[in-house]
Length: 528
Ligand SMILES: *[C@@H]1O[C@H](CO)[C@@H](O)[C@H](O)[C@H]1NC(C)=O
Image (tube, rainbow, N blue to C red):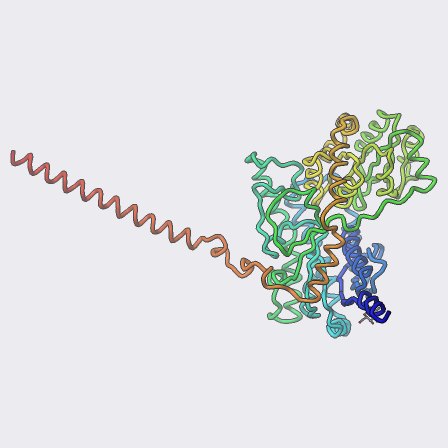
């Protein structure tokens, strides 16, 4: 009996670690991802605190279970954020490859993060308090770099870098992951053939644009930390090189094979929720006709701001399939366009909000027209619904291309949106060709049978980092190497010089020998 009690007791005692997650509220998908990590760690029994500098007061925290410390940043930063949101309709028409837009966007984002970070750093008392907490693990996304900078002041035992997407752009260098630009498509690529020279050139240009987008943010914030804490601030490259782990929000089974590192842990699909039963209203919507198509461009680019010709093309598609119901996530279902459209098209439902994941799980869901956000791509794969992707910006083109590459759907350019015939024929293809549904089902099955779930990976690796700190063995020495050493340029240079010497020497020798032979024969000739 006593033994039994002792056993029970020892099973219940598990170590609870103290974890701090820096989650600045600036974008829905970012907060959601960081919040999911926080809540999973709370469920695993840890004491998790989210440090939330409020860049956008209207956004969600993403976490419901962790302790929260809000940092009020004031009106000015909210305005900087809202100004950038006001222009989000531009995502429907800016080119995928847009050097000027990328540069300006990168600058605007850098300024927003810098002023937010400057406000946050004014809270000396808070920072001191957080240092005294002696956190086992601190986490922040390598996007708003203020969190990583703060980790230098707070000094947790381990730091884990989070990424709400896969490793890209400047992160390759920061974490020491070698990029494979000749065969791994970069974020802006809508399609990619590694055997095409033009595609490889485009891929390199795309990657350079992305690096350009992130570099102002990094240099501005690094400048801020140096200004406040002196030149001993190590810089983000150094800090990144010492992370214990990187948790990246990508799913290798939906990605392109390529080089990675043992400390980069892919935890895609983390925020995915188990589908729930639909309420009466949505159940009725789903069963009025035998097939349903869901249209959503995500939470950033508002459908209501689409140009009229594009809205008309979508309505023509709706009119071409009167036997199917179309649900369109539309922000303002009472505007003039919406009222007129609903009158003419009885098979169209316009809704400000939809239970997307639950709708995709319904057997009548025939296809999804999506912008290709990471979350939506995961839901498409998990719920096994064929999709037509119309990517808008960021990593959406590449996500969408990966889905087409794996046979889960098709991609069309956002510049084809005004052409209804393109929408109609591609939609017909993914609904009528059984191949898409079958592929989707096969991948969905693989995802549910993965050897380790993303949830398990997050918990185990966080606990390991909390217990043991960062491991030198996982840190590639390339982080300390110069460009010349890394690419063996010194060896190449020495080899070239030696080869040149040898060639010159041999040429010289051959010339000398020839001259001698020639001289001998010519003197012989003279004699004879
Ligand atoms: C979590 O940590 C905070 C800060 O150290 C502490 O005040 C709080 O009591 C802890 N909560 C639990 C449930 O241990």
